[in-house]
Length: 106
Image (tube, rainbow, N blue to C red):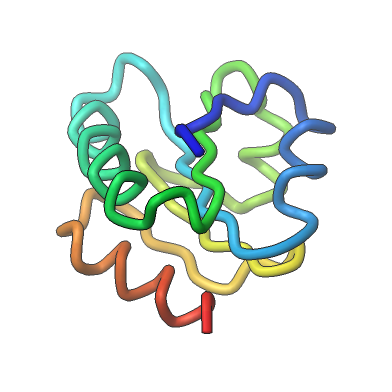
């Protein structure tokens, strides 16, 4: 599985509804968001597609960002079966994202 872009609020809702999904809320102009994308690409390769990773452009999907309580970028939320389980605000080391995924993938 490659990292997907959520193109609509409905698409995002559908993707997070089942399984463990990591959603990256950010914007193209945000420097830490660009750095995070590289980290998420590495994670995606490490996990070999075991979970979905989705990028949300907060400017294109403001309703989804607002519903998720995004106040700063980047914000990463790990969902399990549609429920937000963990919220990481700001750029973190790769190990933090990996630990959050592993915690809910058991």
